[in-house]
Amino acid sequence: MNIIEGGIDAPTRHPIDWASPSFVDPQELDIEMRRQFDICHSCRRCFNLCDSFPRLFDLIDNNEDELDGVQSQDFEFVVDGCTLCDMCFLTKCPYVPPHEFNIDFPHLMLRYRVANKLNIAMKFRDKQITEIDRNGKILSKISSIANWLSKKKNSIIRLLLEKIAGIHRKVELPKYHGTTFMVHAQSVEKPIINKKAPAYGRKAVIFATCYINFHNPSIGIAALKVLAHNGVDASVAYPECCGMPQLEQGDIARTAEKASSIAHFFRSYIETGHTIITLVPSCTLLMKQEWPLIIPDNKDVQLLSQNVADISEYVVDISNSEGLADGLRPIDGPITLHHSCHSRAQNIGVKGAEMLRNIPESKVHVIERCSGHGGSWGVKKTNFPLAAKFAKKTTTKLIANTPAFMCSECPLAGKHLLQTLEDQHNSKDHKLTKSSHPIELISEAYKL
Image 1 (cartoon, rainbow, N blue to C red):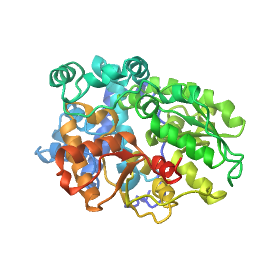
Image 2 (cartoon, rainbow, N blue to C red):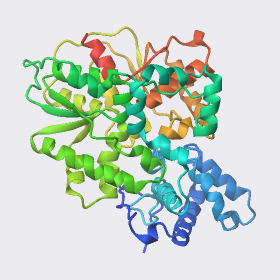
Image 3 (cartoon, rainbow, N blue to C red):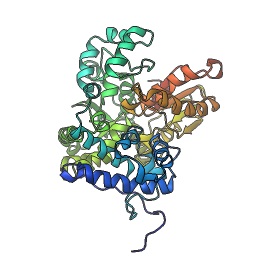
Image 4 (cartoon, helix red, strand yellow):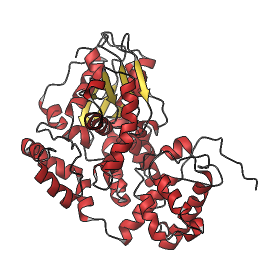
């Protein structure tokens, strides 16, 4: 067999055989980790991505026998540096499938976490952080108290939270809303559908996502207004969290349960002509790419994966197909869009920027750099200093563009970048006080 030096074909991924005993067998896992690590060590093209690669290369370089001399228990330090952003797989590695080397570093890290969860119980506090729906339902009912307690200024409480939950005391935590997006959607009259819009007749369901539902309903409200103005009959649904927090921790069985349940919930909508729209790219990525690999034989999951879109992707499709409704007006100043990792990982282009360029006279700059957040990874005591370090490289580039508006399709990334601007940059160097989602700027341009 002739082995090609570097693949030229589009990356493909194999189904995740997580139910097989061999998937979590310690010896088989160790053999596969050493196989892939040896290839990564020889290549090193990913040295400037997440911290997993410098950690791996340092382990090898500091040992006389290179990888052969590295103890298997030290691999956990490498795994802990991975945020499952997928950038190494999609943008750097020349040896991903269908190449013979069959390198899939993010799924290897996931496999380690799955095995680790089975062989060593997940920390109680890490499991509690992933219970997004339970936490959101409780804390949104006492939102004013929860938000006051979680303020960085409450140093004693934040110190206790750091010791008990492992959440860094300096992290700006998301705020809870007493009126969640679902409550708003069910209690407020829907925006009037514009029957004169070119796209009139389209139907969609917005998957509220846990973050938008509990922490940032304004993004969902803006999406509903923009869709209605463009003739789309859109409703809102939130059966439960998509399972990304569980997947990050290696609880793949729980993610599979959620995938099956949510996909079945949306089947009837899809069969009646609705597109499923998500407001957070991590959720879209999970539904499009990860769920079909986790339970590949589930027909509901396969159907959903072909009928789900990010909100920016959906609006761009309207623009390219029927055309957007009239009414967009210039907004005051240039825009810098942070193109989040899970937006990039969908391999659909920079849809957020495409959408924003429909605004008359708009000047849109795009930054494709890591925000450093990585979901629940970046809030942990062990990771936040590194997350802030990654973010500063991105915010330095952001400031250089002198934008009037900063936005990201990933609201967690936007929040983290905004905190980095406040913590690590002189306020005289920029005028940014808010991070928006691109759909909010479209809503603003429509004066909705």
